[in-house]
Length: 222
Image (cartoon, rainbow, N blue to C red):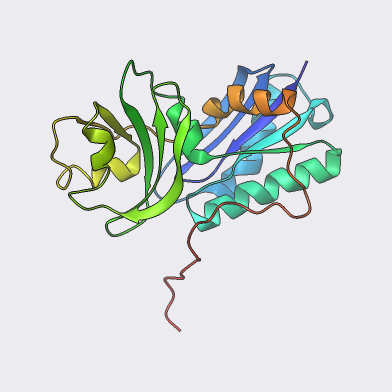
């Protein structure tokens, strides 16, 4: 049996879940634009454990969404995950945020492109086939009318997540399907983190860092 705590803080959704052998048993999450992760994350962890009548020592691993996404959000989630793993002497698992988003879509043909808003006309994106296999790696890219043209010529292309909203007025091919309501959630980590646990795909707790993709830029004037 594997009891895994899953943390998702890459976007505005502060999300914590517990899963046993890949099956969700408890979840607590709150999505708001104000980014309340620093205030809510540890509270949600405690509530998830309490709701399942479990203690931190019962955990077999901690999984965290590793990005891309918000610089601050990722740091908060990864710091919490690493701290728990170190204190409890259990493995750290990291899963791509974009890969987790793909779990929310079931398609019979075409491609799935999860994407997160990266400000201006830029998005973080990756490309997956209908079997949820990654066929193009994650990158930060500027959306133009020609974006993803090689995929959209072959069939439906499902653009999923906050980045899809900024594409609506730019990508006009009828094969584009916009799934704007896909939000990263810890519930989608459950199956993926269990697979990683079984395969012993663990991170080095001392050296692991999130996939920021871009350097942090402060909004504060000097």
